Amino acid sequence: MSGLGFESGGTSLAHALQNSFPALKKGKHLMHGEKVAYSLLTQLLMENAERDVINHYLHFFLQVGLPTILEDLGWEDATDDELMLVANDAAAAWTGIDQLRFDTSPEAIVAAMRAVDQYSKDYQGHALAE
Image (cartoon, rainbow, N blue to C red; front, top):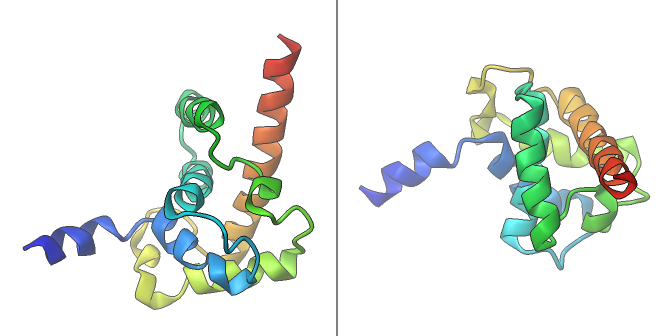
């Protein structure tokens, strides 16, 4: 029965996206949790989660040193075409993310990854100004 739990729990955008990171061939040093952290922020933005929820995770990730911007992943110079390699892999039919209730197209994933990067930078800049 443990396989059933994995099959049900593994169909999130966060896991599909982190599993696709090797497509970019950058950031190979990243651990599973580091990749999932950034991917979870991406999923929260794509789900249109409440700002308080996003900020809660973002604050925690920053406190414990998890990646919240592309630079943290080693992808500060990644082009949209490079991010599209990751997004195309994450959006493949076998990942199951097409069952989610929001746009999981590769284009939406790349846009969300860029949005997370900017959101986190803005959040950190605002926190420093306080």
